[in-house]
Amino acid sequence: MSGFLVALSISFGVIFVAELGDKSQLMAMTFATRFRPVPVLIGVTIATALVHAVSVGIGYGLGAALPTGWISLLAGVAFFGFGGWTLRGDTLTEEERGRAERGDRSAICAVGIAFFLAELGDKTMLATITLATRHGWFGTWLGSTVGMVAADALAIGVGRILGRRMPETAVRYSAAALFFLFGMWLVVEGLRQI
Image (cartoon, rainbow, N blue to C red; front, side, top):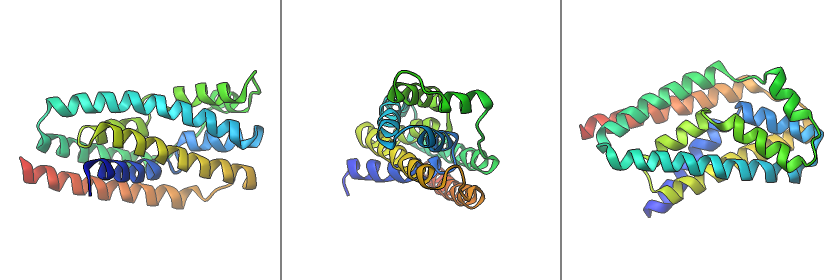
């Protein structure tokens, strides 16, 4: 499999799982109860593409400067942290909920700005940075963007159909288990290279 396809598939899978039960997925569900799904999805896509472009740029730059064994080791430790973060769970603050429910001039602008701000420093941004240190930048950017948009599209659909109810505990534990599994794999790989 080519480097592009590896980066695309790994980034898609990791970010899709990372987004399940995440704060921005809760925001997508909330926006979907207020606005039509298409403007919400467009706003999510624009914000995600921008944040993940920044993330990939940071990660790709770090990847060129650090030895790959240490990158794998640090990435594995980071994924353990993402697993713990996922187990802890995310909730919306009242300010974030208000931002998601407000009907400003344009749903696309409201969703895009809210998502851009919510994703800065979020675990999906950090995971994208981590992935970009090891894989090609374009495949990582495309895979992480599509993975996040797909997870949020799922949330938009659930938000439209079921309102705000979703079995968060099962989703959170499954996502955390996958993060721990990826973390173990990366640590082992890193230790082999050092």
